[in-house]
Structures are given as C-alpha cells and as structure tokens.
Image (cartoon, rainbow, N blue to C red; front, side, top):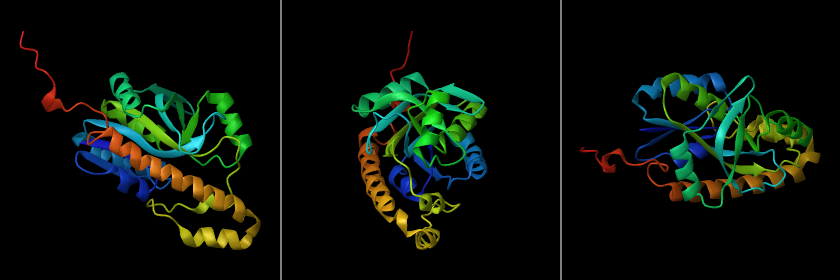
Length: 227
C-alpha cells in the first residue's frame, strides 16, 4: 500500500484507489502525523501529493512541482531518487525544486517572499513536512509533488484561512461569515476559487498519468536476480 498525505478530502478522493490510501490532514499536522503513523506499518512508501502555493514567481496556477527535497523549520530531507525520477517522467511538464512544509497558510506575497528567501523553496504546502518526518521515522521511501493553486505574487483573501475544517472538508459556513464581515475580498475569493478549480483538474489529470501505483514500480514485475 502506498500512503498519501494531503490536505482536503476532495484531494483524497481524487488520489485514493487500488494500492493507494489517501489521508486528509485538514490543516492539523498532529492529527495527520498520528494517522500516517498508524497506517505506516502496512505501507511500502509515503508521498505528499495535492495542491499547494507558489513561492517562485515563475510558477502559475495549474503547474506541477516535483520535489527533489522537502524542507521545514529546523529540518529537511531529500526525496527518494528513483521514485522522484519516475514522477518527473510521468509528469513531463513538471517543475523541479524544493517544497516547503509549513504549519500554517502563507496568505500574502510578503510571507511567500520571506519563505522563498529563507528556504530557497519553489512551493509550499501544510502536509509535506509531516509526511517526510513519518517516512523517516518508519524508514519508508518518500516523495512529494504538488499542483500550484495560488501564485507567489498574489495575496490570498482572509476567508481562505477558515475554509478548511479539521477533518479535511470544505468549511463553507465560516467562509461565508468571513465574507459577510469583509465583502471587499470577494473578487480575490472568486479568483482563488477559479485557480483552485484548475489545480484540482490538474491533480486529477496527474493522478491518471501517475498510474495505479503513483509511479512506483510493481514489485511483482521487477526482474529477479538469479545469479
């Protein structure tokens, strides 16, 4: 079984199936870590997969990033080289770079620029650092790839920060209350929703391209060394 760490239930539904089990963190790193650790003894590998934000201004909404490493405050780890290369081959238009795992959302361009300068990362999400640490703990191969949903030069509307429930569902009620309190963010919210929709479509396309085992070789089809 290949274990996927992601943020939203919608992402998990796109990614799960067959040999793949997807867990939605809902923005809670402690709960995601516990869920991944509970499933890890039955897993052959862990991957962080889903949507994320751009830190590199060259990335646009809908672009794929395949990580050569994942970093976080106080640590970092290189991704599994053969698996990462397989992801790059299947996602042929993907960008290469470092992904930052962050405990909270980076809502404005200033925060994104600061993170870019500090970590030299091209993209950010809230699950990759958790998946990397659990993979390290259990000695499992680890990889990460993300689809960009917001650009580095864009500020996210404040309502986005309350849009994800702890179980990974979309929290429509809190978003509507935030919009009612500050209706000036509606144009930015519409732009964000449009770009996120594109990211979800690209995620579904990528899931098909990666195949039933997310680019990992089928162990049953590997050639045997009979020397």
